[in-house]
Image 1 (cartoon, helix red, strand yellow):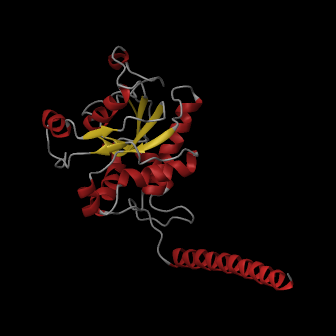
Image 2 (cartoon, one colour):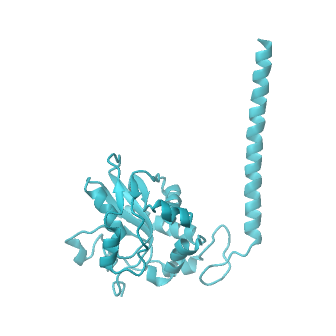
Length: 266
């Protein structure tokens, strides 16, 4: 009995020491990261002016300049005079709602594109924060209901293997932490390894993505947000949304930038 008691005491001391050691290592790691961050140049990607920590990537001046300056239609991206869900053109058809903090064509789009094509994520924290602010603003004025789950647009396993990451998942993960909404990679799958959409016409995009995604029979949510880096023609989002809407699941699209049709922001 005494031997068991001594063993238990020794085990308790060992566990406490391990916990203390882990906390010490975590504190040391944070200190090293902060020290390195403070010693390296922290400049805006756009204007190259210094940025004070903890901010990074894009300075507040360049960020505000690149964000939407007027209300925009959540259907087509058209500039409007008042903040409503749809413009007059979209109000009758009420298309898929797309939430973005900025236009791809007005300064910030370059840094969204660099995430996918150059694995450059310096702008991800500040742009995801801008998207969160946009989402919470629209929720606050009653134009948006938060979803139950975040679903990143999936990559085919071949594309994921060659690229090494899914930028939509990284964006979703950044949003999840700020909004306290979980991310799920389950249920929605890219079953066809399609060619890149870049450079294709609208008709070619639709043909390229036809039947490229599948949704598992059991999906337990009724409201989702589909996450992507940028929405251009909306072909990918519509193809995926159709799968959910057949089951009466509400879909909205969240992205870092929207490449609306020419002239809509004039």
